[in-house]
Length: 141
Image (cartoon, rainbow, N blue to C red; front, side, top):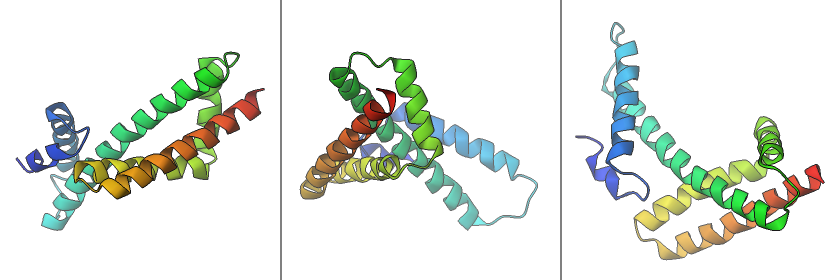
């Protein structure tokens, strides 16, 4: 299968690969009656794969963000945090965008043993998580 070599990327397992494969199958079915070439197939495959990797690792970042915000302030509820996060997403907050990209770079760096890059990514992730925590606390309190 095309996706098997990608299981060496941190966070991708057989279930993730199956989900990606199903997503690609749905997209290909939608294109069934159109005239498309092999390049389109590769674009579909790679975009689905990259999106899945990004989402997996960004969810880990969000978990860490929630943990830190709960440690920092006991007064803020999960609903308030969720509301403020959604607001930042809607405004295309640069801290969130940077975190999204850094989490992806970190996953790739760890997966392919680029230790210096992974270390820098972890430092930057922590920095931007802290910025988001401060933003949320400031806006809620």
